[in-house]
Amino acid sequence: QMQLVESGGGLVQAGGSLRLSCAASGRAINRNIMGWFRQAPGKEREFVAAVSWGGINTHYADSVKGRFTISRDNAKNTVYLQMNSLKPKDTAVYYCAADTRAEISRSHRDYDYWGQGTQVTVSS
Image (cartoon, rainbow, N blue to C red; front, side, top):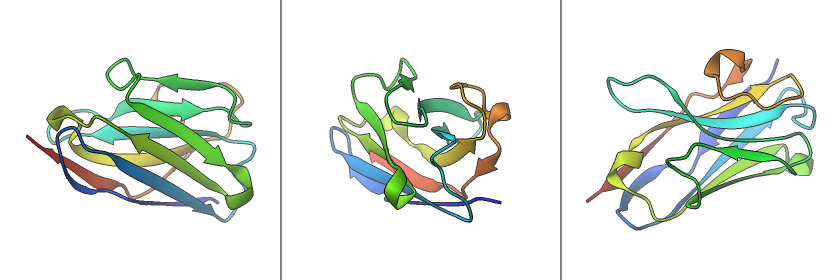
């Protein structure tokens, strides 16, 4: 079993930045696709970004492309999401997730392990 714990969320003004971290324990992440999803009140959980095993390949939702950057440090068993130029519509609970398969998926149904989430609130 893998446990994921997110941190780094908070309240920020529009245009600001936050860096989310996701620390894994219980098993190594080096053979997992790691992803970030978010869920706003009353909305479905949506894909934000994902990174391949070695960190070479990354996928982003169109809504965050150019503003968010996903990265991983397998030695630290940690995944990051750097969020710049934040907008009020980025307000949501952000979840870290791990997929044990080899190819990146944008569907939350394909991910096997989930963190509890961290709240990100962007004020206008």
